[in-house]
Length: 183
Image 1 (cartoon, rainbow, N blue to C red):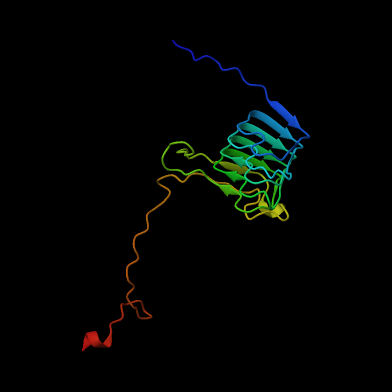
Image 2: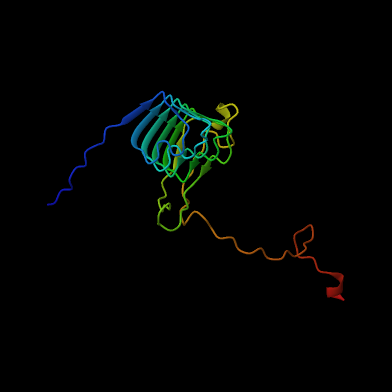
């Protein structure tokens, strides 16, 4: 019997009380906990935590665009994302949010469900979980923190048949005939 070698668990690296403004400040991070940090500044950087894995972000502030693109196993708690924090959660997988305030637009976009190449997923498991309803977050965006998305299964959609031309009907429901057709 063959056994797979056990991969050592990487200890969580902790980043606290920092300010990040540059482009891709923590790009590709693995096993990271970010706490009480601010992502803002004149540098106007984008994609601060892009393509990360196993990231937890707590009590932080985001004023820069696209902070969480293509992340996997992401937990975001008690964070605020301003109007300038556009499109924060695009193409992520396994995201958990709790107690967040989101003021920007285009907050979520799911990975395409067809295919299987890079950036594509064929999984039918939920991608986003949230425990705070959007109505409980004053000033939150349309999605708030209550967004839940999953990839639709192939059986959940029924193709629409083309709409047949409607035949005029009488009040009793029988087809109405035109006067020229009876003469």
